Amino acid sequence: MVIVMKHGATAEEIAGVIQHVESLGFKPHVSRGEECTIIGVIGDERPIEPEHFELCAGVERAIRILHPFKLASRDFHPDDSVVKINGVSIGARQVIVMAGPCSVESREQLMETAAAVKEAGAHILRGGAFKPRTSPYAFQGLGLKGLELLREAREQLDLPIVTEVMSPQEVTLVAQYADILQVGARNMENSALLRAVGEIQKPVLLKRGKMSTVEELLMAAEYILAQGNPRVMVCERGIRTFETATRNTFDINAIPVLKSLTHLPVIADPSHGTGKWELVPAVARAAIAAGADGLLVEVHHDPAHALSDGAQSLTPDHFARMIADVRRIAEAIGRTTCNRCAMQWSRLSAWA
Ligand code: PEP
Ligand code: MN
Image (cartoon, rainbow, N blue to C red; front, side, top):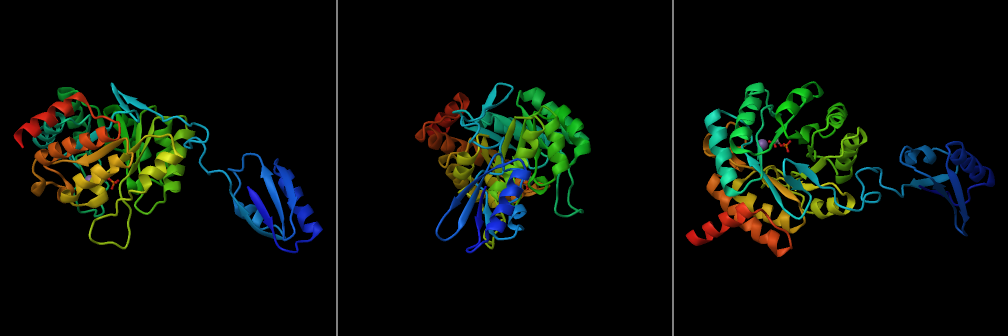
């Protein structure tokens, strides 16, 4: 941290700040300029807020030098982290696709959609059993029954599962069924939940809050990492802006910003990022071109009758085409999807 003293700060004020810096266990480094004096604070400044020094007499302002997150930062972990789940590596060269319905609605709906996304080349099956809905009158998910159906799909199709957990009390239960625990946008700042998923050794997909900055997202990831769980992935899913043409504004900038700040895998959710199925493939392609390590995409075998997020759900056919296009983008930037996708793509090209 750097403390800038006010123009004309007195010798007593400067001495007072130096003493304060020392009393907190830091080493002061004083440089006296013609206009003002600057005091460098040497040591790990993260536990201290700049306001702490700004309240001292004679201080103009205090500025952080280090990012407030440490375990999530590339500063101390320059290489990409790779999260491994049952043979799937997320954060490596391969672009990973997680796909499935917004909510698990019934055995028929889940099995039909799951088989289709697997056939198209998805690596991980998504589906919400506990749903965070805006309205308390809307479908809230099948709960435990939904988890049991996800387990059935996992066993039948040999696909790992990602599903949301909404409260610390439910972490143990959901972790018995899920391969990846999803912390949703609404819960990104729920520190009790972040600690609870940090205490359990399961990969976590942490979604950005709809009104959260990239730094706040990484501070939320820091909560999980600080509990000793290193398997965290962060997800850009769109933020709320003044724009009303789409449900959210997918923040494409966040992808390269996150990739430069953190070693954690970065996932893009173009479904919630747009809210409109027609826009999902274009934003998925853009996210992969921008450097995302994977996608989280909503697919429904019958979107018109979906119990949640039908408007942003791709049909299995549209999803297969999206995967084929994503594969071409991935290859253009030296990445890959899987062999299955390559086979699927050549079949689709043969039909075109
Ligand atoms: C979801 O993935 O279905 C979901 C509810 O996402 P978000 O938390 O990003 O709104
Ligand atoms: Mn959804």
